[in-house]
Length: 192
Image (cartoon, rainbow, N blue to C red):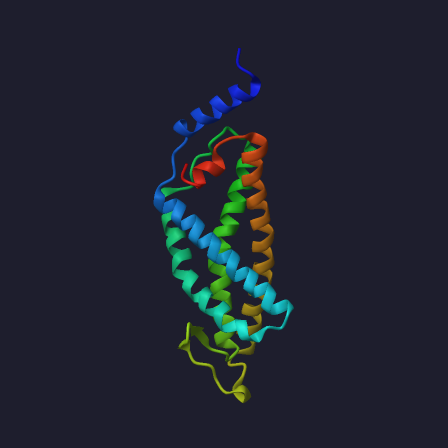
């Protein structure tokens, strides 16, 4: 006679065959954009809280770098759709997961765009690893467009905290699937 844990494990193993496996491209995009966004956020919070102005150029450069990757990830997601859940879930959990995923995707574009617009409109330019995509203006000419700079800065600030909260929910959801539900959601995203 099999134990309840063994039965759940066997059911979990069968779930992956019924659920759509993720392509290597989906997995690569998830982890590369996710890792970069976490890194940029960590730098952003650290430099802001500690007034480390020497990190702004790196933060901005990484923001420029991630934008095309984030747009490619969104285009891929639009083409392929969201993957089916590995295990059956009630409607509320499905809706919550979709809201979290949409907010994650939106944040990966809103943050770099608002950062670049805020920096350019503020007159600080948009650097990219030692190059200048948009030149800074002399300090006495800053901001170039105060209204736009202020709006973009506020958007960037709020979106950063929204992303941090949504990211916590996303990780908690993945751990809930892995530890509590014991399904293959996390393993699928790891390519296993």
